[in-house]
Length: 256
Image (cartoon, rainbow, N blue to C red; front, side, top):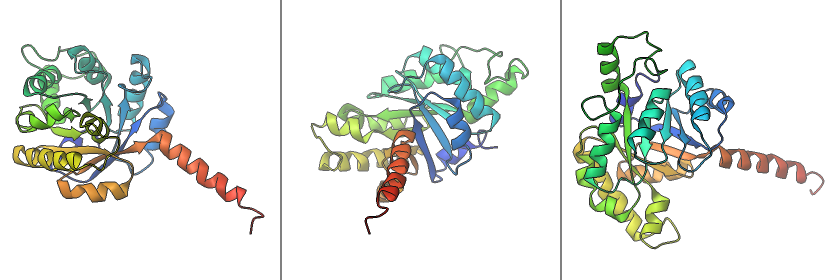
């Protein structure tokens, strides 16, 4: 049961590999589910995913028992509700730079007074085939909430964010954070110091530590900061790299 056990694997800090999906096509979920990836994250913040595309991709993920996360466009209750109702195993919420924002995000993803609106008729709920007690227990056990630390303010508040009930993981965004510190690269001392601090906060709170990396080599390098879950590149990069490598092989014919 890949979906049912995903949250436990995440918070227990098992090494997990996934990628951002930028193309709103459910067929790519079918293909990537045949790989050894542990999950895919639909990038509804920076890619053209409307609700229909999210719905189709989540349907395929559920059918194949392949965990689908969604990076929502913002931390609003509406965005989070729609992602989870469609069948995502969890959400990645951008720009969480305070404990107050973390608490609001966690509340929006969890059932209870002032929290996620309850509906037993959604895909996630099995289209009215599961009882309320079962669904409440399922949400508590399975739903994943990742808070993205993308601003220097988020780093300063990372201990409080990590300690927030309902936040399962801190996702350090190396690109946004680098720009926030005034750099045009991801090799600054500011970023490395931030990675160390967020790593310590995640470990102290018993939360998972997550980041984006360009490749597995960088994941191995950054694992020393306590990261165990990695969003590796995207299907755009992989398609381009694969196509370029094969084309260059053909173009070399006759040159030797």
